[in-house]
Structure formats: structure tokens, C-alpha cells
Image (cartoon, one colour):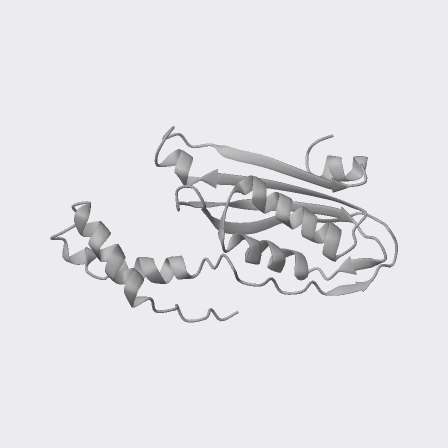
Length: 179
């Protein structure tokens, strides 16, 4: 999959250069292109970008669908530092089932905006419930949070959040590690 070229943001570059200078990041030739690189990177996180529609197909039944080990990379909305990890998504379809590629694409698109881990899981679960018509959904996110590891507590650790939506379902609870 090819990546779109970064959006140039000269105004953002100028502000970032001024901020780095104000913080004392001056004199190192390796920092010369950093404002442009940072502006390009931040422009990849688009808070208002529309989500791709889910590919939906007639459901062959109402058996549990579970996807594990889905990687995601996001940006903490509070500190603008990365968090990343793996997702488990389990759902019981209604009359439609989401195409298998739709779930990781939805996760990636939701993660590519400033986020909170808890909100990311909730948005993923609610989209599957509402847009795919799932009967029940469970999302488990396991992530490393750089805002916890590089500042504040300065401690590594795996943060686990779980979002359950729809009808209670023991199979979903087990799939996301709650039962």
C-alpha cells in the first residue's frame, strides 16, 4: 500500500521552528529539517478525515467473528506523544458481516487522529455496532503509552482497555479476555 505524500504546512513549520528555538533546541545541524519533518508527521493525523465505509456482506449466520493481533499506531490527544499496540475485535454479526479488511482499516483510520486509548476502543466498537449492525461487539486494546513512559510516571507498562457494546455475550467477553 503506497502512502500519500506528506501535506506541506509552511505555517506550521515556521511555528514549530520558533517553538524549538524558544525551548533551546538550537545550534545542532541535525535539527535543521526537524520542523518540516514534525509538521509532515503531524499532518498524517487528520482529526476530521471521513472514515471509509465498511464493506458489508450478507451474514451466513450469527457465529462469533474474532480478529486478533491487529496493530495500531496513534497519537495521544493530551500530550501529542505516540501510543501503539494490538487490538482484538470480536463481534456477533446481525444480518450483515463486515469484510475482514474493513475492521483493520477502520482501526487504522480511527487511530490516525489524536486519540485516547479508551475513546479509540469505544469508537471502533460503536461503529461496528451501528454501521455494521452487529448484535454485540467487544474491543480490547493493549498499548504502550509514550506519555506514560517518557514523561509523568516515566514507567513502561502495557495499558489494557476494553469496550463492550450491544447485547451481553459471554463468547465476546472471553474473546477480549474478560471471562
